[in-house]
Image (cartoon, rainbow, N blue to C red; front, side, top):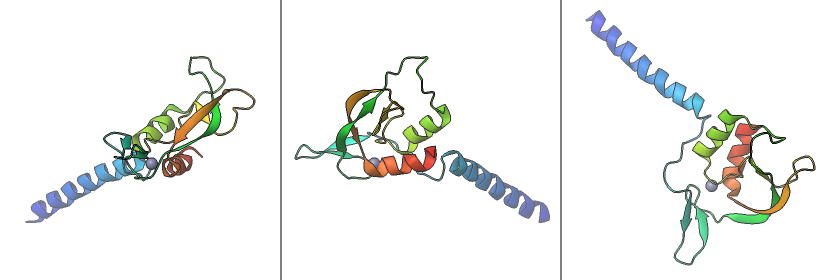
Length: 121
Ligand SMILES: [Zn+2]
C-alpha cells in the first residue's frame, strides 16, 4: 500500500515538474497556436490572440542580414514569437536603433507588445 501511494506521489510530482518546466520555459504566458491575424467581415485585421485591432504606426526597421549591429537574444526572440504573435519583431522598433534603421510602417498588437516587453526587459 505504501509503494502504491509513493508511486502515485512520484507520478504526480513528475507531472507537476513537467508542467512547472513548461511554465518556466514559456515565461508565464500561454503559447499561441494558430493564425496570428484574423480579418473580420468588415476587412479589419485583428490580433487572433487578443481580438483587438492591429495598430500601424511610423517606426524603424533594420536589415536582418548577419553581422548587423544588433544581435538579439534568440531565446527571447523565440519566446516572444511563441507567446505574442503580433508583437513588434526584434528588427523593427518604434524608435531608431541608436541612429540606425530605415523609416518603416510597423503593424503590431499593443497587448502582444506589452507582453513581449515583459519578456525582453
Ligand atoms: Zn495580440
